[in-house]
Length: 190
Image (tube, rainbow, N blue to C red; front, side, top):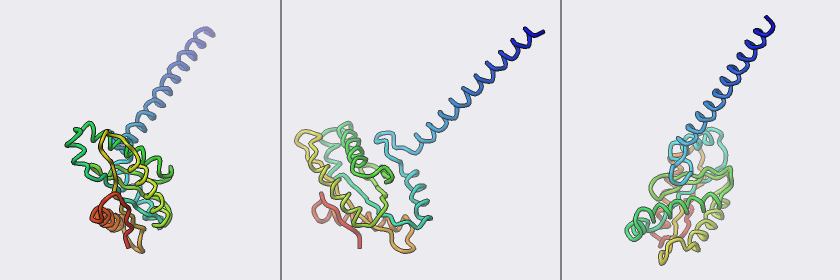
């Protein structure tokens, strides 16, 4: 009787341990899948949906943040001259430079195509200093032979009672202003 009890307890221990192990593995896989759904597969930055979820949470907190709209200048010509693999290489490199130029609590996103968005705590002046550093880093990087890569950046701080979409629209307008003024520059929205 004692021998059988020990075998049953041992078997139950093995079954429970196995079930616990699979539950932990399942939770980790579920979390990994959820995180992958929030990331751009090429650059590893947040995707557009995740960006808006995070931005709306910050909006609800009424915290002081600035937003940067970043566009790679003449990206179509990069794709035309170096193929889509060359373009992808530029996008991945730009994402790495963005991650390196900003802090870990900043929210960086590949917004679409060759556009990126960064949400950073602080004022437009703080964001402008970070943006200028990024612009300079990109300009001084030789990634593809005989091709100069630059970015145009629009910056806007959140106005009173302004939702994230209005705020982004002002940053986008500032980015287009930077393009109209000759590209490879940063402009701050009024």
